[in-house]
Image (cartoon, rainbow, N blue to C red; front, side):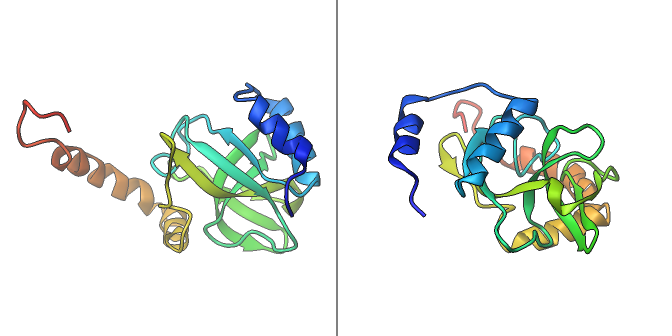
Length: 174
């Protein structure tokens, strides 16, 4: 389905609109009822390193297919009623167990299907598409997160990555 001329016109005219909380949820629901995706900057660190503060996410409305293991979804948190973007760790008839990748041992709980607004289908960082975390590896990430291993791996690999990503010559900036 192609976006309407009005939608394309408005998307070119409005370069940035700052919304959060209830207003963003209402806008997302309104856009999704037309079957269109919504694009916005993610805030927070609960999905670091895969989604960082300030990354731009594209959220498509859920179709007839329910979220699957490893999908990154936008949902309304059952307790706080705030919009969150976290990964699906397991799926059951009652809903989805969801948790942020950077939230060791802190799942959001069982989120009913009606509270899940859409699926993250694209991620941009500094104007470039980031694919890590949204492809087939998402299933492994969900399993590691459910086992509490993602935080442990990140704790040990983070300093190692920082050490080896520096330039060997101090006068050359990497």
